[in-house]
Image (cartoon, rainbow, N blue to C red; front, side):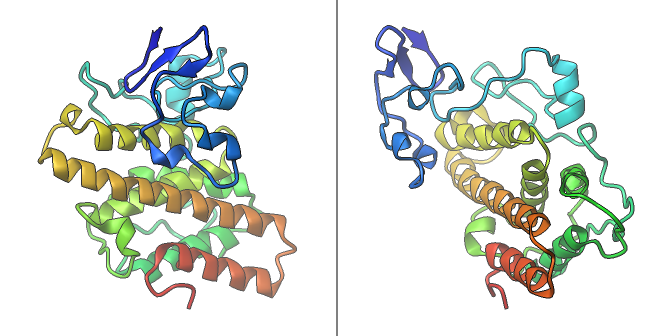
Amino acid sequence: MDHTWFRKNENRAGRWTSPDPYNGSMKIGDPQSFNRYSYVENQPTNFVDPSGLLMMQPRPREMSSMEICWRYGICSNPVGPTGGGEEEFPGGGGLGGGGAGDGPAVKTQFSNCDDFATYLYQVATGSNFGNHSALEVGTRLFGERSNDFSRSKADGFLTSLIEPYQGIGVYRHIVAHAGAYLIPGGSIPSYGQELRDIYQQYAPSWFPGGSSQERQEEAVADRAGNAAGWKVGEHISSFFSSNKTRKDYDNLKKAIKSTLCSGGGQ
């Protein structure tokens, strides 16, 4: 048998010996994902599942660890029972650096969700941005994952994104995953953060600080923030695929706010 951190795989039968404990790996649009015993949805030539919780595309063999660190910001040791430490989105490194570039000045202090959603909209639509692409927007947002949001407030966000124990940490999760969605290969760092948060929920004893219950509950909000950021990336990508009419601009603004803010797309 092949042993992973959360399950055992019977490689001769090509199936797990126990069901997938992570419900987040099930998707309504993917019927194969409802088979909780199948290994990578019966596609072992295309995917791997090193944790036993979530399938992923294998890392390109031609990429060194140093290049993965430089391109995607995954520079820490793996999180696991042997002593995992840093999060996969460390400060510095990675694509972009959070600079102002040709767009609106970088902003790190937000009074509420509406303020933040407006900023994301401005970065995406190009207030003073000139000719820009989805990749440039993604690079910028992903680079802002290491910004200091400590002077911001978490008012007005959907409760699921900030409670419990998350608060202003939601800002970093959203910019990182929105940016990762828009960068080719961005699923690599996105998966890294998602996997860490899954570990924190299912194996909280591996992480220092706070009680196990607190770490588990925070991980739920972490993953909600990851998903919301990914959704914002989808909205921005759809905008770049549109004709960019006035209605498309309005729809983007409403979509971002409804994904993040308790007031919806008002």
